[in-house]
Amino acid sequence: MKAWLLLLVLGAPLAGQSSLGEAAEQARRAWLAHDAAALVAHSPSLVLQIPGADPSSPLGRAQAAELLSRYFRPAEERGTAVGAVREVEPGRGFVELERRYVVAGTRDERRETVFLGFRLLLGRWVLAELRSEP
Image (cartoon, rainbow, N blue to C red):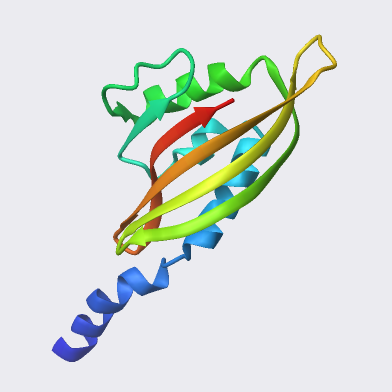
């Protein structure tokens, strides 16, 4: 019985394990759908560096989702692609999203690179930082 319980406890993180590439693809889909809640769903806190957000302190999940929703609001996505995906050190990953969008009411397509910092938390890659560069 003890061996079974030990196996269950030690194997639990592996069951929910996802690769950094899978986390990048989930983030890409959430960004494309403007689903801020899904983007930050498993993040205990998040550093945002986007227009309209104070980059100096981590935000809670609800506040981060609200700021991202406001950031998404005036934009119509044309495409979002995963660029670089790198594990920069054990348990820390980096993803680049290449975004194409137009501001509502205009025709000029804009491009933006979104940098996502991930951390491996209990066997799952969670978003810890998001930076936007036009």
